[in-house]
Image 1: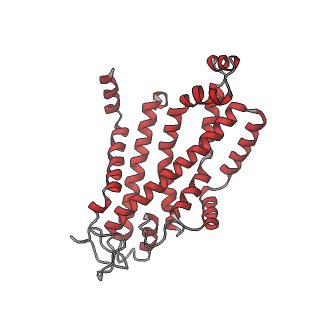
Image 2: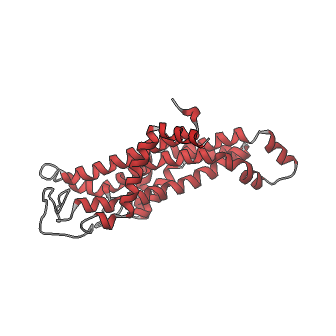
Image 3: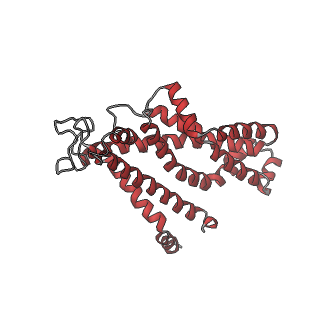
Amino acid sequence: MRKEKLRFILNNKMFIIGSILFFAVVLVVIFAPLIAPHTYAEQSSMRLAAPCSEYPFGTDQYGRCIFSRVIYGSRIALSVGIVAVIIETLIGVTLGIVAGYYGKAIDKIVLFITDTTWSIPPIILAMAIVLMMGSSAQNVAIAIAVVSWAQFTKIVRAKVQSLKNLSYIEAAKIYGETDLSIILRYILPNLVSTIIILATLALPSAILSTTSMGFLGLGAQQPQPDWGMILSDGIQFIKNAPWITMAPGLAIVWTVLGFNLLGEGVKEMLDPRLKV
């Protein structure tokens, strides 16, 4: 049995490649002070210097090491993305369970709120929220969560509707178990794989949204090394110092690709029926 599971995992190429890319990012986040040759705010007289042994990805207009800023920036991207996904998972799953289990008027109200949220372009709504709350990495995480929970609600609601009519849940109702007990003991455990899949696939989108907000100047502020902000600052020097934008761009591609492959691999492992 264990050999079969191991063989199945090893045959899941997307999961293997995604895991390698994912753990590489995690190692960078954990050991950033050891990997980066400089601190992210340290300035030098070598402004807009090309990549060299001291500055592997060159320097920006303030003489700061781009490599070090990208390395430290991974912490912001990953932490904001994870916090956003946790919040949107809690909101979306809770509303999905309530709507799917109780139905009727409650279901209609939740669906109305969900459809209304889904109808507004996410980046515009997120910008409005951050502008009201103030520009910071924490507020970006909240804004991303507020605009992204609807997909969780829709999928979880449909899943709960199919679960609540099963015979053992009907029997639990007959024996007088409370709604909360039924949800926690019977429905929620059956949603675990679905929630893991949704959360894993939502993380790349959250990281992209984080960098997009940083690019617009609404995320972490100077001198914090937000990838989006580094990209934005480097655009004006793209002809003379293209390495400023290339380094965070490659970091974003690596991270998002890794999480996307990992998410698809997890989806295939937890629900083989979804395999194409």
